[in-house]
Figure 1 (cartoon, rainbow, N blue to C red):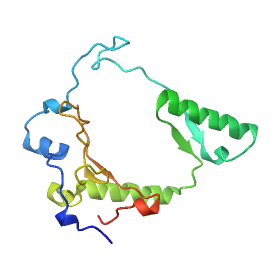
Figure 2 (cartoon, helix red, strand yellow; figure 1 turned 180 degrees about the horizontal axis):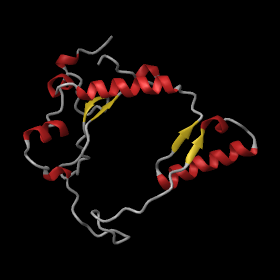
Figure 3 (cartoon, rainbow, N blue to C red; figure 1 turned 180 degrees about the vertical axis):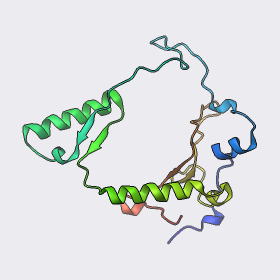
Figure 4 (cartoon, one colour; figure 1 turned 45 degrees about the vertical axis):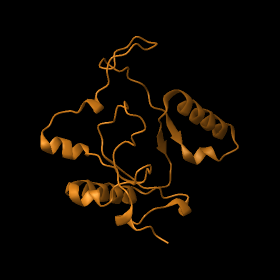
Length: 159
């Protein structure tokens, strides 16, 4: 049974689009303040460029030396970098282009229309920005649409 979206409690927040449209300036909640950190690097300073690893998914299921090497590369990417490129994932370019176009269409909608798809309080699927976990949390300057597609029993595609 699908939940009744209109009766669910939605977070009370302004999206980045709404903040920009009102011209009210960048809210304090989006600003990191300089703090001492182990490397002594200012948060407003230059970020060191890093090489983002590329992982070949077609090799990950192989028991060959190449497969073990790719698995080691994935482990290293997740442990040290936190991000990686993926190749040979099996998703067609046409499908990726369609997702890109649908995403552009959704984010071009008026703010009021997108709010119909806002995530629930304490939820993560739907439209919005960061979940606010603490009163002093610094928020990312982004609006997002998060939809889980797998496992299928956790999909909330009523949007």
